[in-house]
Image (cartoon, rainbow, N blue to C red; front, side, top):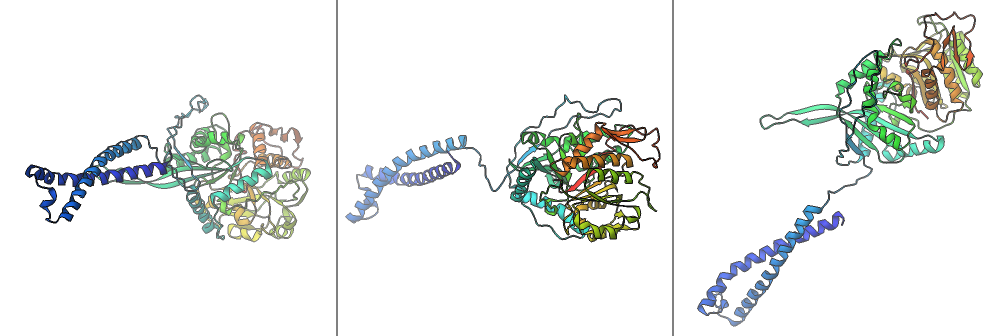
Length: 550
């Protein structure tokens, strides 16, 4: 029996009980008069009027009340029993207003102890996530509010027009199109801090605590959106682990990065892992809150594998600021530009070889050193779908400190719009030697907004200053994979996996991958103390796909 039927029965039975009770009270009120008339052998009506017609009418009324009283007692009992059965067996109402989400509270995660001589994670300890389902809510306003908040951060900092708000229906439509066009299973993960108020009042004192609660929202082309609230870590704890991770991952001599990498995995990925497996997801697009935008997501670790070994990964400011259309870039031409030496920056000795290697793989037009100018880029860009800039890029604590270095000038963040990579649309912009002030809000906005500000659909850049020859190896492998990968982020994933598995490395001054890629004679031999392989995430995890990862 559905809820509406139960509601009607309950209301009718309650009404019957009230009416019956009222009639019973009237009948009881008339009963003493009836008893008195019987004792005096006088008709009851004579107490009220001497006229026969009125007496007869009142006698009929009394008889009617007697009959109604009898049946009302029956209905009273019946309605009481019916109401009792309803209260015992009625199920809670499940209101459905638009698409809904599941909300599950997370338990404590295992304690991870730091020890440089052991693996930091015990794979036998698996957290249990109880399915404590909370009231279902409409997800559309939630997702729109989060996306709008993130978009407004970038719009204000980058001084760009407002994007068009995208609701859940449109988001799913985008994911369905990507599935059909590229043959991948994408998912979008919002990671944000939501302000909440906790009532900690007692009988003696009223106390309201305000805090920012970490929440994840997972959206896929099919299946209900998933919302997870993380109660096992405060905002401050998460920020602390992000800072530790960003600091430790840049130390190639040790594995101390694994502790924060595993904690962040437990908070950001593990709560959604079952649903990701169930829905066969293989591509993740992250839209994250402040101080989470500079995490090298590829290096998050579950104790056995890096995140990049499971999924191709992308990062975007907000969906409303992202050009989500899919286009196969395999037939695109590449404009490759760069410089080996700069007046106010360290040299990039492998740039010439990097661009030469790309030219052997792809249809490329290249300009080096003195020809690497902003004017040359602007005059040449129209016929190219991919633009590769082997140069310094910096994202600092202000817009003035954020720039792309050309041979003869710096182009700061305020001028990125002058590149006009949306006329026509550049499918992929690559900056192979970037540095970002990790954890700084303005630096994150500059880095995350690189594609949006320049007008490119997608940007590939590094979070920190990576070893020049490691960059050469990764970029060469990236363009190899881009020739066959269905989406851009999958090509990056394949290149990063080749690095972490030791398939790309240095031996005797040679950077290699299966077939040897020699360093030219005019370049100095690499010092003998250099690591023979680029397996540590320092060498590959900094590279991030920004904007449209497809």
